[in-house]
Image 1 (cartoon, rainbow, N blue to C red):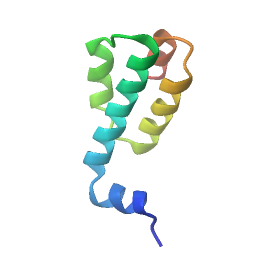
Image 2 (cartoon, rainbow, N blue to C red):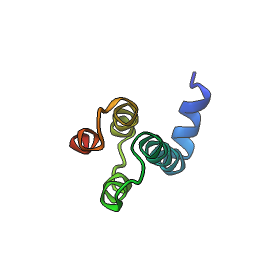
Image 3 (cartoon, one colour):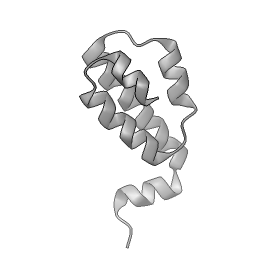
Length: 72
């Protein structure tokens, strides 16, 4: 049986991915200030939920914005 997040991901994958991308940007902004457009542009083309999950964790734990960029 699917849990609520799995149902949402299955029914609305693009919407969930968009929210995860927005969360990544918010975390990066909170930690490092202004985020360059090239970082946002690179995030926009990522469609793998697994990759976005790795990037969200990376946004929360990277020592610097440059370290996060290496994950992209």
